[in-house]
Amino acid sequence: MFDRSGPFWMRQPFLSGFIADENNREVYDRPVGVAMTKNYMLVADDATNTIWCVIPSK
Image: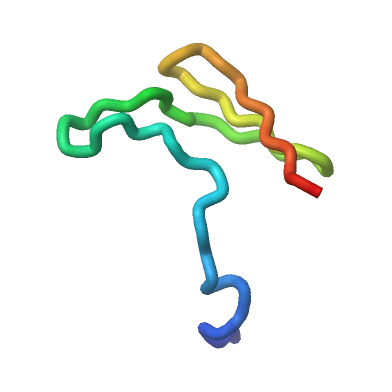
């Protein structure tokens, strides 16, 4: 059992900026798929047909 004081409950966004206008439901991109490796994360975007590579900062 986990208590709510650990890192699991301290969430914060690390990949954002996809929503252009939330009120009008407009988006810049639509992330639809994620693939993980040991060193990075790939995010597929079906709005612009782009694959984003997310690399952690050191």
